[in-house]
Amino acid sequence: MNEKTGFSLNGYLMALILAVVIPISALNLNPIWSASVLVSLIILALALGCLAGFFMVQPNQAKVMTLFGAYVGTVKTNGLRWTIPFFMRKNISLRIRNFESGKIKVNDNQGNPVEIATIVVWSVTDSAEAVFEVDDYESFVSIQSESALRNMASSYPYDPQEDEGIALRSHPQTISDSLKKEIQDRLDKAGVTVHEARISHLAYAPEIASAMLQRQQASAIVAARTRIVEGAVGMVEMALEQLKAQNVVELDEERKAAMVSNLLVVLCGDKHTQPVINAGSLY
Image (tube, rainbow, N blue to C red; front, top):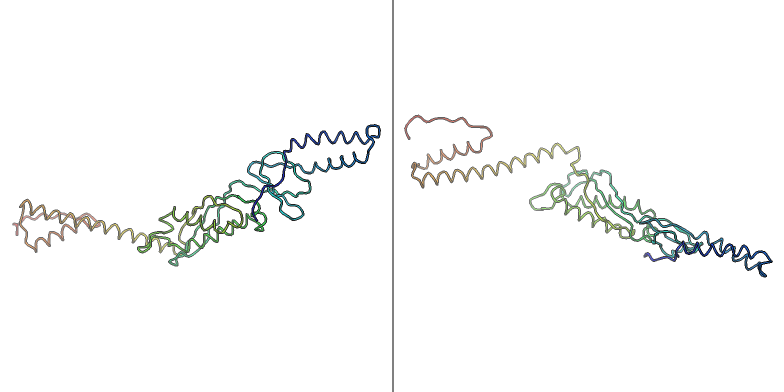
């Protein structure tokens, strides 16, 4: 069911018309003023009944109108409005709202349990679908957002893997775009538009948090050590080339190996090395 514009008139204009019709009809009830009392009585009754047709539309709100169970349209024009008194009118907000889900536990695509939560910014854009297609559109948004969050979180790893670059922790914008699309696909039938969806909480579940922290620390240590070794090898290579180019000293293979070993110990060691002065000859 798609939204359509309902019938309504300017309320101030209608109030002015009734302000003229009602007194005249009331005066015509006196036989001295009119020959047809019955007609004046009917006009007065209709005019008084029209008073029930006034309603107010606040900014960024709408009135969904039905007639004996049939949808007849939606009024979004702000201010005082008037419509047929038999129309039933239900108020619905078109304002942008925030929804924050609770922390839910879900397994990522590596099977690791994680805690995740999201913030969804949404608004109603089709009042007819929001009112008639779902029983409670606010509850529908809440439940479907959490369902989409579970499905999205199980499609990506928590940390980036070598064979898959996108991860929950390392690609927040990509994850947000994926989550927004996932939620929007589920809420289209409810006349709701998702403006933004972002992860508000992301962490490993408590039962594996300490183990995963150790793994992250180990990965960081390995990465740092790799960079140190790469730099140390480059420095040793540069030192040997400069010694050879400047003819400072000629080293055989055995002493080159000893020099490389000593330099690598100095450059790659966790602690400061103690220098030892060689007081003997060259060999």
